[in-house]
Picture 1 (cartoon, rainbow, N blue to C red):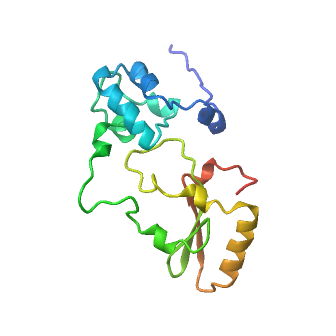
Picture 2 (picture 1 turned 180 degrees about the vertical axis):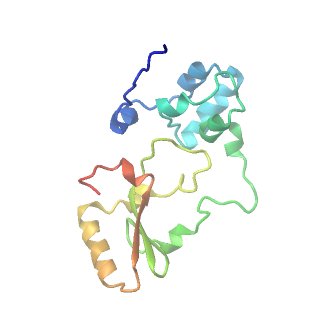
Length: 172
């Protein structure tokens, strides 16, 4: 009879403390072609590598075409500029009336709660979003509340970011 083993997954906070952020570590762990490493290191300077251990364990070792790896692997192709593509594909810079708040649609706002994500997807549309300029700080949250009080058309507030669920419960 097979023995059932129950594995307790580490808390997500502990997982975030152990993220893989160095392309060399990723290449070694997955036995990837080292010829791609210099480009990965350069591209990771444009947008840092971040991948959790759990996510990494879902990938196939030695397989450069693994779809999960492609989602997070920094590569030279990120330096290629394409006509018609831009760093603000959603036009959020035009809909950012105060730090921490995006108001693109009449009845809906997004609060940029955090820039943190457990995994940095290479296709992230907010990879160049100016989070440092959009940190509302303590005073800023009061400004956001006042903005919402002065905007009765808003009936939906969405936590966004990064991944807002990486913020503590108290902060949220």
